[in-house]
Length: 222
Image (cartoon, rainbow, N blue to C red; front, side, top):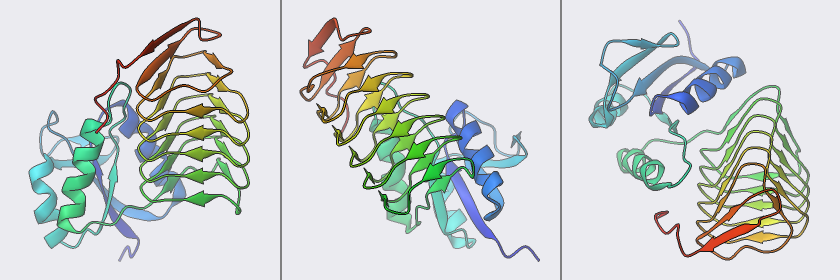
């Protein structure tokens, strides 16, 4: 009998592929099932069974599954991720962290719950990672940084030392946040951007050196 933990992933799609692959690589989980509104119940996704939509959560909990993970990604809004989290909380599920075995996470970092850390990502000493954050493939979170709840640090992005990334922030692929910079709640930093100064909340910061900054345009983060 497989005595490993059972897990339900909330949301199929691209980000789910990464989460599912890393969850399996940890060896911690036995059966992993998926809920998704756009995938037919009874089908398979990367070898895992799709059990229906989010209405199944209550039945899954009654069947003995206690671990849930929000496997839907976010770019412009964290609204759906937050909704899925709230649904699972209401049913009583716990949220594990899924950390790919290839990632390097300092024992002196502080991690919340429901966090995804992808392949070859680095989280250095003194970093604090908030609940439900995504630290994607090859991203680097340097010493003393804070990454807010539901924030998404994309593939290859670098957050230099002692920077503060607010809640529900999206950092695009290969963007760099220079040391000590603050990025306000709900902001979006475009792919490849170089951030040299603080960014106010609900802003979009676009371009290699932030040549275009649009404030007050990204308010759908609650």
